[in-house]
Image 1: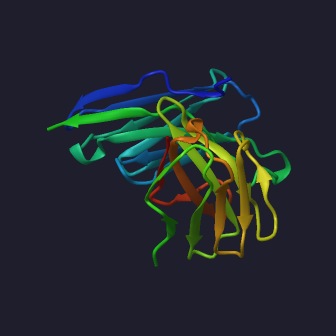
Image 2: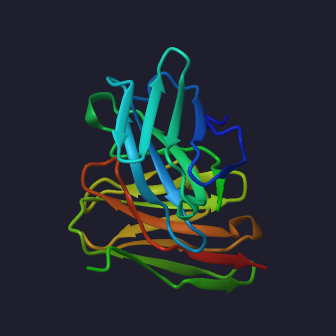
Length: 116
Length: 111
């Protein structure tokens, strides 16, 4: 039972354009969402996060949007750069009473390729 | 400041052999985690340690054991390796629970 899904295995974008990566979840208890970026032969690195009390969080070129009613989040990268080429994972956690201790559920990942 | 380090980087085992994957962090984080990454599956939590002296099962704990040796170190042991445990293993740590810092990974092949 995949509680966090990234239905697009790959995405190809031209440099300077917008990249939109999507993620859907099924567990209504999830209240915190994160995006991680992973280069080959390296561990994932934290990119941006959003709490369920917000619907948007922005950090430089990266913006995450959360639509709770649709159980959907997306990551927008504007403008896209060749160095953004990587695998992007969305992740979610449920934290009832602050006891989750960061137990994350990850999506399958989306390979982003930004062409010069 | 090395962050999260993992040893070894690569390992090949035969079915039935045992081994321990080592993880250490120098960020004074309370919580540490072990994940495995398989193609098309994302990362799945094996075990975690909310704080020194405690460990708990994650999503896929069968076939593994862990030890939180001290605040810095969290090891993962395979007592009798199976081909289904062929994977890339990542250790992570965090202070605030959600924003986790990952090590570079250990690529394990079980023949």
